[in-house]
Length: 143
Image 1 (cartoon, rainbow, N blue to C red):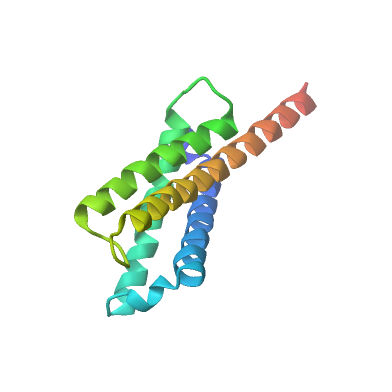
Image 2 (cartoon, helix red, strand yellow):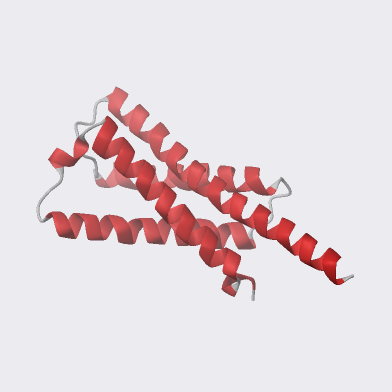
């Protein structure tokens, strides 16, 4: 089963770590949004971690089972962009945001969400590309 291979779990874990790091960089350092986090903080951070674990799983699962006919790295990036698009639409409709909802803020946050998930998808694609190359080397050594 393709999902139970090591590459799936490595891609999933790395994408979660990278997307969370980018999110904390964007919201915590660049925008300084964390001062607007509702209390209790532990609940917020716990739900944020759970959310990124779920996003990483969905991204890796869809990447594993959807064939797009393009290169592995591009496939991951495009899937991440699409996922970021839909995640932000959900957050926007539900009114989940740290700051005001001016047009400029919405556009920038929307673009950032797509970039963040696009990079996460790129990480998944990178892991799968490295695993594919490793498989080729192992296969050629056996012959």
